Image (cartoon, rainbow, N blue to C red):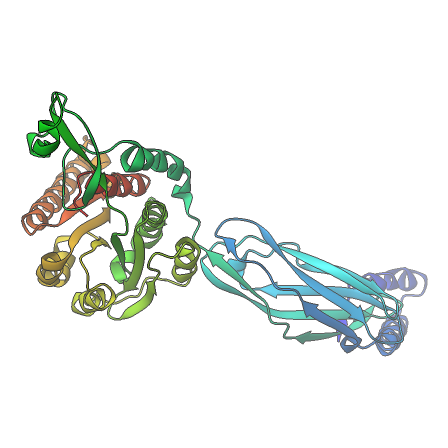
Length: 430
């Protein structure tokens, strides 16, 4: 049972009766009359179960983008139904205007749309659909909630995709359009041409030069079909926020841009995410649909309040890619986290793979170092300088082990990581 706003308004009208005849009996009779009207209206209200409700599927949507869910309401009873329908969702689904008016004659149907603007990744679920059927006087009604399953798959936003065209242009210059001059372990023979100043003398083809009137050099083209393995740290450090954006979200954005570029370059892309255990594993290989599959695998990832077990993750890396590959580890560069967790597992990875560590740098550290004034600001600047020095020292330690470090702010990390990938590809170091 539910009451509408008309009931208190009707009770207030009894003030006029009290003015004409001020007595306790008048007030009691008025309240009794209103109660009788409410009961009669409630008995005349049709059952809300006569309204059948079904939900149509919702297509996946990127975080922050708008979509909508549709409910089909059908009056299966013999009486007209007037009232309200409420479509309830998780708060993070961003449901708006989810209360819909109903006025259905017997056999009528109506399509009701609820706008959604999800603010979190993963599966956002519908709670319940509540149908409220009002009586003919609009004083009271019946109400029933029921489960009408609904789900919207919220994918990572992929803000860095705006940089993909420029990276693809550089890739076209590197691969197929402009051959490299220096041969590396990741290059293959492309063509012969005349020697020009600046060419590597090791590229001279002496047999071809003997048959020609000029010196001839070989040009090389970056090889395709290399392996790129993205390893994402989802431990407690990924929950830290930089400029109010979780580290994990920034790492996902960088990984997506690199995966999109590498797949376009003809390289196979695999993905691994975990902390104390593996949370997601994707062996995409050379499939053309690697990006949609990768986005779907990333949708459910959330930081776990536990330390990363890099022995487990390194074993998973070996199991996922036994051939030499470019292993990109997206994690933090904090001294304690690296020394106690990642550092012992690196030698096994470096022996077989080329390892790149990509990390998000907090721009607030640089801003703090330039502050002055009171004693607190000076201490903050000194602390920031110490943190930056520790990060630089840790990067040097990793460099000695053969690990490349890409350290950049969140908005620059995707570009910096893809540029590093193109550099390695151009030098034949994949």
